[in-house]
Length: 143
Image (cartoon, rainbow, N blue to C red):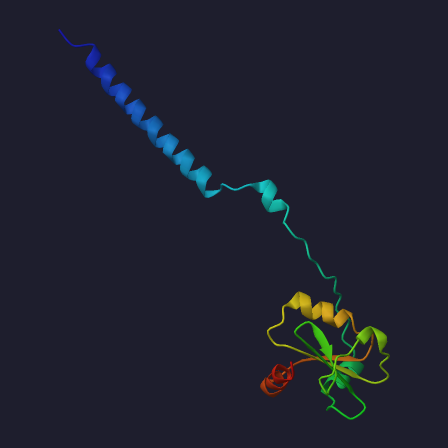
């Protein structure tokens, strides 16, 4: 006289454990890849600066190696404002540059802001540089 229910009970327990394990596995996989794809696809604020790098030519490489001279125009961009070599405010849109322009930027400036500042200076002969510690101190004291 064997018990017919003994084998069925163990099968039911094994099946329940397998389903529980599978449910936990599915939840873990979903939680690893969970995210709102619609929100990720649409950023809150879109800010883009279009920039195209000019092809390198021997003329531009030689111009970048030249030492600063008196004919050069120094334009400093610091704290969101353009300044001349005497730290006086400067409007680059109102100026016409005849010689080489040296744009000196704050080294902590974001790339987007640096490209925006560069785009506001209308000249073909431009050298971009960063302000050193002496200039940063001088600009900080002047403001």
